Image (cartoon, rainbow, N blue to C red):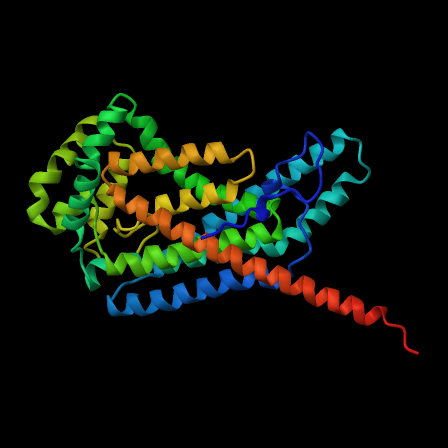
Length: 373
C-alpha cells in the first residue's frame, strides 16, 4: 500500500514565518470544489439512509439528535471563522499590507464551500452514525467481547486495563480523563475546521472523505459484524465476564470522581436500554473510532510540524482507551488499519482526479494554441 506524500508538500518555498503546508491558506486550484465536496456528501447520504433503515428496524427515536449536532458544529465553525479572520488580519497588518480586511474577506469567501464540510456535512453524518450505533443492542446485541478480550490477553499477555494502569498509575487519572474526553472531543471539531480554513482543497477533500469512509466502514459495518461492548460494559451484556471486568469498574469508581468518564459511562450504560438516540450515545468497541480519528490526524500531519503532536496524541488515546475500559487494544489496532486503508484509497482517488484534470487542461491548451490555416 502506498501513501501519496504530495498532499502535504509545499508548492513553493515559503517564508520562515509561514504556516506549514498542511495549514497553508493558499489553496491550489487543480480541483473544482464540487469534486472536493461530492465524495463526503455521498458518504454522508449513505450513512443517513443506512441509519434511517436501522433506526426504523430498532424502533429508535432519533429526533433528539438533529439540533444538538447541527447547533454545536455550526457554533464551532463560526468561532473558527472568527479566529481565522483575527489571525489573517494580524498577519497582514504586521507586514503593512494594504486593505487587509478586504483580502481576508476574500479568503473567507473563497473557503465558504469548504466550511460546509465541518458545519453541515460532518454533523449530519454524525447524526446518522449515532443513530446506527444506538440501534446495535436492539438489532444484533454484543457477542464478541470474550473473543477480543482473549485476543488482547494473547497478544499483550494480560487484560490491557491492567497493563495500562501499571504503565500510567492512578495519580494522574484526571489528566488522562480530560485528554480522552474533552481533549479528543475538542480536537475532533477543531481539526476539521482548521483543515477547511487553512488546508488546501485537496487536503480538505482527502481528510473528510477518508474520515467519513473510516467511520462508515469501521464504525458502522464492522461494528455490526463484530459487535462488542468493551471491557467496562461487557458484564452488562455478558454476565460471564463479570468476574473478569468488575474489578475494572471498582478501580474506576475508587480513582475517579464525578468527572466526564463516570458521567459518560453511566449515561451510555443507561441509554443502551432506551429506544431513544441522543448525542454521543451508543455503545460499540470494535473498532475504536477514537483511535481511527487519531490515526487520520497522523496521516494528515505527515510532512508538517504537527506530526509529532499527532503521534503523541495517538499514543495517549491508545493507552487511555484501555485504561478507562472503553476498548480492547485490538480495537485500536483494527481502527488504525481501517483508517490507513481509507486514507490511502482516498489519496489515490484524488491523485487520479488531479492527473485526469491536468491532462484535460493540457489537451485544451493544445487545441486553443492551434492557429487555423
